Length: 293
Ligand SMILES: O=C(O)CCC(=O)C(=O)O
Ligand SMILES: [Fe+2]
Image (cartoon, rainbow, N blue to C red):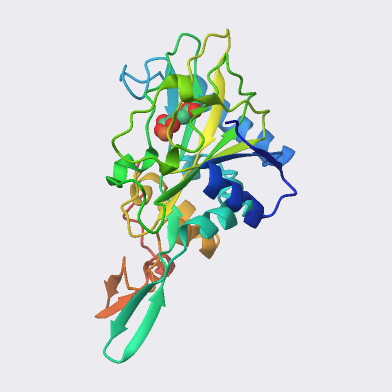
């Protein structure tokens, strides 16, 4: 089975249909030339300065991982708000409303979604393949998935992705497997893409960073959308400076977790009132989080 490619003229409905069926899809020309060059300009110099990881098993000793991207590049917003990703993620994740009775009032609600993590991943020559995994393992998700997926992930290619330089390896169709079946490298397909293309896959799809046998690094950005009743994998409240968060459009603030969902998840109290954390962002002088420089 191969990875199906759709162009950036495809609709979120079409992208979501392939994603549901195959567990993975590639969208060519996902990032505009301005977004692509902006991301590279902001992040490549930072990637040059950081060391590779010290975890030989999962994160890789020849892989550089730069996170906290909403604090580091204004172009992170362009990935998050790209309708080809955001609307597709909503179509996959915000399904099967739950019925909630409050006395004689019945509410039908779907979960909000939020950014679960942000990471530029640069795989250097000599890096072996990452263990094949499902991203929703962080949430101890069971398979086959019950009712809905937990995550829709995206990998935006900042450089070309080839089989030789460590393109993400994916097992199409593996989102339908149970938890007993072991993923094998022989079952994977390399997600070869050009810079600016994006790979999308489900939280339950087996994949992993590929082995880099080339002579140059491979760089991409991963930014999953997750069900917002789950804890964020990367703590966005502590990762994005509060002044940045305050300057974002409200939709981005919500997608970073600064919102109270329909079922009141995530409220704060101000002056005896149970309010949306968006109210906290409007308070003059509120600057107690996001302190990592
Ligand atoms: O770098 C890649 O291609 C995939 C990385 C990945 O799947 C992960 O770190 O969870
Ligand atoms: Fe992963």
